[in-house]
Length: 181
Image (cartoon, rainbow, N blue to C red; front, top):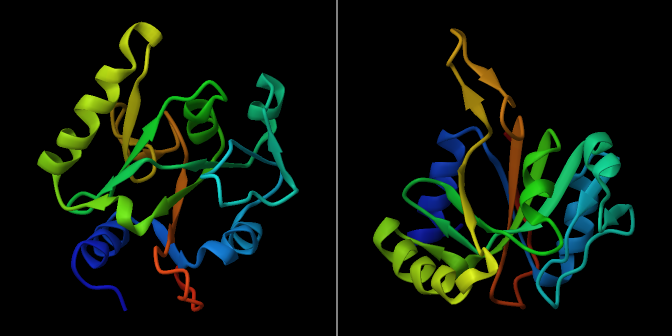
């Protein structure tokens, strides 16, 4: 069982009705294969992590429209809020995270910080380094929801469901723990 910042993040995800899975780096591909609903689109994960073969990489606009699941790497998570920092990439990570009904975000447990101050300390210099290249990031907290027109509607401006795969930094960890939304 996780303690400290990771446990706080998991508790925040549960409050947001966001499912989560903890797994080892070696099990990421099989974990994702169990979570995705096809058709699925995705962008490259961290160098040592693989997407399942069924996930379409470099998706076209038509692929994005048809996709049920989008898989991306999150750069950072904010434990107190259950928020994910999703950076823009030339491969289209923003679109992959926003268009499909299910967004599966992959995140190393060492990339989970406690609060906003730590997140901004990390994020500020990173975005400034992007200069005029238009580097940006989305801070996503749970599934898309709006009550602008009355009743709460999920998925109006993004995914209806979010699931976070937390990758253990300790490669000796072989057990996966899963909590569904």
